[in-house]
Length: 633
Image (cartoon, rainbow, N blue to C red):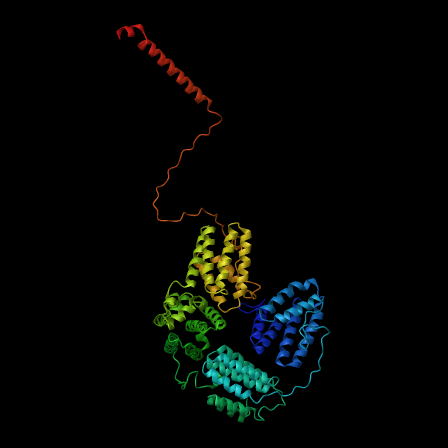
């Protein structure tokens, strides 16, 4: 079982394909090799064959033809060892997942080719040297001896890359270095120099993780040179030294030249060799005082951030990290430094680094005792500095827990620091409306008022659509409606809403902003007293394939019952308050039921009339029509 925090082979496979799809074939190849290291045992034989096949295709694309041939033969041999029958039904589920994976990362043509091979009951392996739809047995080409393809321009590309990195333009620098790598395929000597230049470029631009990976790759390539090969002959090193000099890295060029003269490994380690620091000016080699220098670097980084100079802010934090010891990085100041680095990475749009740095900060922070967080002034100093430099909301939340940049650092905040457009500071922003409505929907759900919850969730969906069709908030509004409909017993409507939410997920799950919407939704669930639902969503998101379009991180429609929570009975909807004063109505007495025709009442009335008539006649005869009365008149 993989250790906690270690990505599974499925996650590594997705990462490798992602690098490959973005043109970083070197990182994609290393990623596929790491996947193979985890695919052990007979249960993973089929997957080993598929990954060997992908590695063969990638190697052929890079020009490593001999290695591609070896990987293709391993793929074919492993397929035979799997015992699977080509076109068999037992392959369908695995290949469906494989097709979706390839489609998601832009390899749709390969997916269709493999699908056709499976339909034709042929092994689902693509030959690197065949047409997209092979019609015959795999073609074994004769591998010709590799000739040196070194272009006259590889050193100029190195110069351009280092110059761009010195200006903070890391992506153009990496693009130039990738072009240089394509020109020297198979030449490990020059490849080692180019990766060393990549380490220098990453260091200059403040991307230390990229620099560290490239530095190690340069060392590995240098150590893999043949024993009978002399790297100090020829003009390769002279051209590299000149490129460093022309790019403004005179110190690095001098160090490289001195080691070349001594016939030592000439590769420059930016951390150990450079004394000029990351900024212009000399690095003062004074004694490092953690308490004083930590605050000074933090304040300088926040000043640069407030002025919108995010690259300089990252460099200040990087300088501080280099001066701190490993033990200090595992204490309170180190955790807070990594927290700040995650915020700055998010501000620059480097969302992957922001996520990695935040997890690293949380791991250190959670290992500390409460007194270790508050005894020394680091936390208080950082909160005060953040308040003074425009990060008040984060400063208020920072304390017992760290602040996830995907939740607490919003794009509007950065825009407010640059422009005070009334639309940006207004509470009428669609995102604010979405947060209000989706929170109210789950608060109504807590009371069992499912109809009201669905109405609020539908309103949140309308506000989310104003943010864009690919915004994942649309997805979570639909997901909430599906959960509420299921709880209310409207199962057909719930299924339709869930399918629509899956379609919305596919539109936006691959975007960097997807995690922002996910984090905000989890936070709202917790604030609305639904921590169990947030835990369900987080558990799905952390799975290896949860962020892909074919395994969405959505709440299941029956998650309320599956969570074993108490399902509240639906209550009557409250009448809307229209401002009209009404008196309370009195209860009415029930009227007795009448059985049949009321004959008794009619008989009583008839007797009463007869009695009254007889009485009147008697009075008339006695007092009006009698002889005595007539005589008196």
